[in-house]
Length: 244
Ligand SMILES: [Zn+2]
Ligand SMILES: [Zn+2]
Ligand SMILES: [Zn+2]
Ligand SMILES: [Zn+2]
Ligand SMILES: [Zn+2]
Image 1 (cartoon, rainbow, N blue to C red):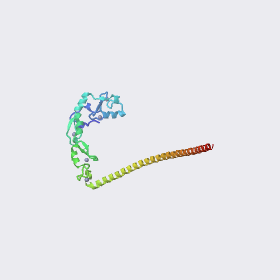
Image 2 (tube, protein in one colour):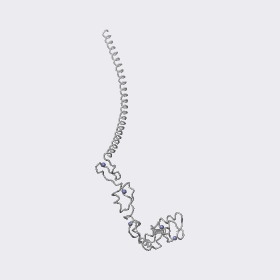
Image 3 (tube, rainbow, N blue to C red):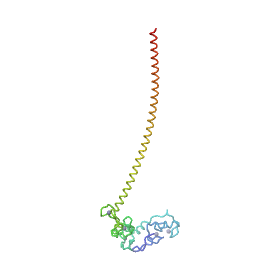
Image 4 (cartoon, protein in one colour):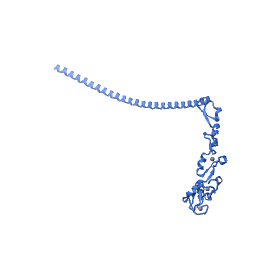
């Protein structure tokens, strides 16, 4: 959609009007037949048509070009009123600079800058609104450290706020302690399992040593018996020698 022709000061050349919306060209494009349109208007038109709305010549989006420079200059030099004229803005400036003005216009409606506030207000009245906005906030004057929204000012109770905070901290702490306990228990558990394993290995080794020991003992006993036998035989032989 173009700029409402009512906003312009003085005569506007017919050639600077959009053939579709009949307003002054906004963001213009030109067809090969030299008819000009607002970008939004001609793109909308070409969704369902494939010709120039003025002379029915066949066109499509790829054939659209920027406006001739001299026309663009004429367009940019047109003088028009700020769109906030009905709210009191008396600014008249060139089409080229109207966007910049309107972005900063004191009469533009802007949202309140406080989070949560849905008020829309003229830029020039924002400071006044901020002073009374229900969503403005301040530090508690009693030093509890909380920020109080203006809307909740009378309900603010330092003790209650601090108690809630304390409860929160307490339950958080309990949670943490529980977690630490679980962690510790599971670590102890795994250590215990480890010890049990070690113990059974040691037990096996002891059993093994015991059986080795008893084998050695029986070997020693049989060696000693053989030795005794041997000695008796020697003594016997000695006796027989003397008798001879
Ligand atoms: Zn248009
Ligand atoms: Zn045309
Ligand atoms: Zn303005
Ligand atoms: Zn507000
Ligand atoms: Zn407080």
